[in-house]
Amino acid sequence: MVLPILFGLFGSIWYYASNSVLQTGVEVLPDKIDVAFHDINLYINNTVKQVDHLAVVNFGEVRTQFKVELNNTGDELSQTFDAILEKIEFEHLVNVSRFITDTALQFNDEILEEIKGKTETLKGNVTSLTAQAEAIKVTAQSLTLNSRYIIGRWHQIKIPKRLIELV
Image 1: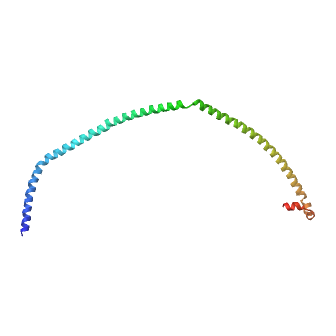
Image 2: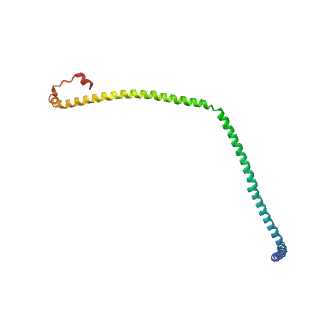
Image 3: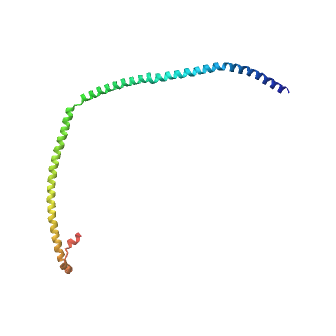
């Protein structure tokens, strides 16, 4: 029985304590809302200033520095190319190119003469082969005419042993 009385007493004390804190919180709430809105306004204004500084000032500095670096790099590359071009002996390269061209032309002339000679030889060989083919044709025609005679006397033909051994 003591326990419910203690819980009731504890609940009443809690109610009065929270009621007084609640009353103080309600009275202070408008001031805290004003402070919160002031903080939000300050944050937004600072953010706008920071973004503006980043987008205008910092970007401008980066762009300027980039242009300077790009110009410096271009100047350095130009100086490097000039130094390289000074070291290249163009006259020597032209002489080497002429030598290669002359050698190629001379080689082509020699090859053309050799090909011309071989072509003439091949032409003679073809003419000879044509004549031999004509002779074979005449012989074949002659054999065709004489085949009846040979077939009729086949058993009388003597084949030399040496020819048989070769076959």
